[in-house]
Length: 100
Image 1 (cartoon, rainbow, N blue to C red):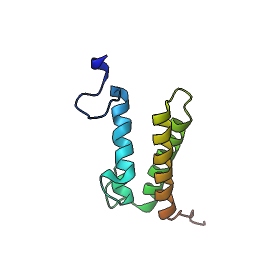
Image 2: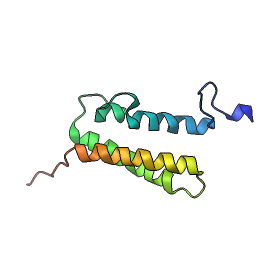
Image 3: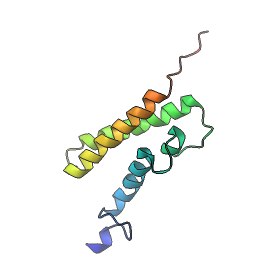
Image 4: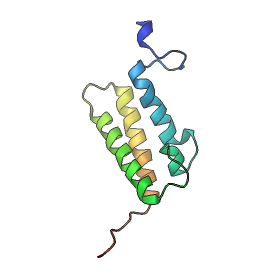
């Protein structure tokens, strides 16, 4: 069983979940408070692209929270991260399509 755990992570998660934990840490502000950093993007990314990345993250974390195979800890984490991403979206103005 020890071979199935993430080595030296300080968190008892399976290897497949290590990326998810890192994603959650970053989205919760582990790399800084600004939206691009939280989304793992360059700081000069256009707002429309920031919004797109945030929408993708929100979809991903909502699905994780609804996974019937998920344990309580994963479900709780997914809800917290999804709320955090909703905060990012609230701070990034929606772009309106250009009229022809």
